[in-house]
Image (cartoon, rainbow, N blue to C red; front, side, top):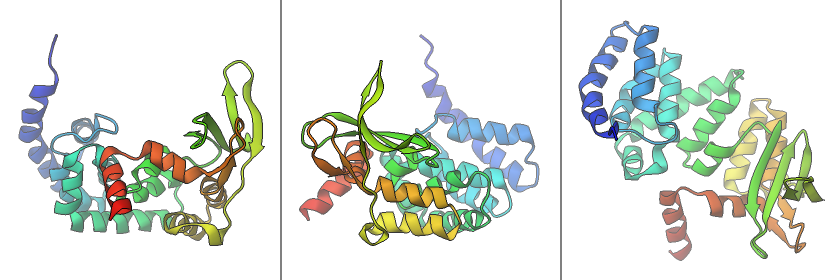
Length: 251
């Protein structure tokens, strides 16, 4: 079997600085950007070798290059898959702070891809589970385990309704129960920040969806009521975030 993994690291070490030099010198052709995307972001949500070291240079380019902004955002969103990402937040703190300002500035223009920037800011704030899963609430579905009976509860927020249900692969979502959205006053610090950001930028559907996501649901099997965000976070936090959460609970 061919091992594609090992040649990748030296190839990155050799080519990446030259490609970034080329872009910084104004030679960022479409083929060069494609090569950078493949090299730095080609593994989807997995942080690849070379990405953390490239981040400060990409952020500097992002002041004038949209593709660099998007690439830097993709790197940060994949940062918590391993220790390399944790280290990146320490070693590139200034670059990440500037990236936050650049993304926030873009969001204020209310771009068509608003949710991309919103999710990038969530990653910068280390809300990686929401960064990975949050949609625009046009037809969002989340799977959340009931903390009392362990039923895998389907949570719908969007055009299909706002409900909890038991998903049956033949009958669809059955035993539906209306969700109970959080009031603005009930939102925790993260929820309130997300809500206020969406309201600031005129994203009404996103803001309303956040209230439901941060609200409560009734289990269709045992009728217990639980916090949607709490259970989703507990089941979906990245490993390093889970360790930090557990430490904060026991501190």
